[in-house]
Image (cartoon, rainbow, N blue to C red; front, side, top):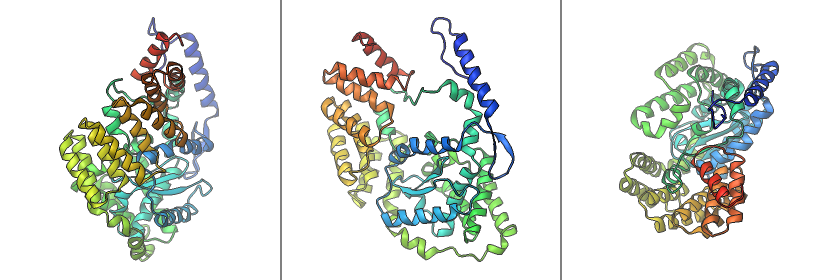
Length: 442
């Protein structure tokens, strides 16, 4: 367990110990709930309201990190309708479920504990019928209904109580924005969501098949999903590694699904797959298959720090579609890695033109401008990002750096103070405190 410690002795103070103990005791005294799936009483410190609030706080940032919702209203309505219809067949039909396809080319599906779900276009391109999609949606709904994230949050509640208010800190050197810039976006749900255990996955698989069959689909859709994931893990593991880090996969899950479909749900075997409808709705994504391959190859080259190879792959993707938002954003990051800052700024401007409503281009543009010492542009970009998508403490910090570069110390100090109200450790926090002390504004 980590906790704030006395700087002189390294020992938790009596006041801190009493406070943490009181919080923990209160939580234990009141933290029992009935699991909606099993009907059994279990330790649960996270209320249903808190689960929904996690969605409201984090899902917009995660969706932006995954390059925003796909700009295809017809497809989004299709996904939302299936999600809503299946949700009515679950153990918690009253939750505010939603389903969205996001632009990210890596393969993943994820759901927040209050029911906000996303599927990447990379995964949508791999599936071939609606029953397989229903298997995925059912699986994610299973996590919400079994309250898996809430359970895992409860297990770490003592640590969370101690760290309350610490926020998110990114370990980058104050003068080196490269890791942050090239890592921004495409981080996947693993950065914000609980990593499920194998037992969680097994239960979500079981619930997912139950929900999809209740919704009129063949259980073979779940079997197909498992087959796609295990096959892709062998063919292109780099494109699916984030999904497997939060959703452990194994041949055992495929075999279990096949056996359950054959034995427990044999009577539903002839239920429809709705292949034609799925293929029609996803035609625009499937037409991008080559583009998605290029983006995945570029991502792999970036991970290996092969900047020129990454530039080649991203360039090939943009030849397929010169207005692809994800492609333009990733080319921006690649140019930063190559220290080609003017080129990076040109690409991020093109990304804004391609998707004006998606704010990540302003966060990324601000970071690039800051690295290029274009402080006024950086400040403008960070201000716009905060208006559209508030709640990221790092934006306050880097906006403070931009204002500092402009010579506006008082305004910079306000941003540093706002940052320190949410983040108390890390190099950024140390830098902010040092500046405030030097300026006599502590």
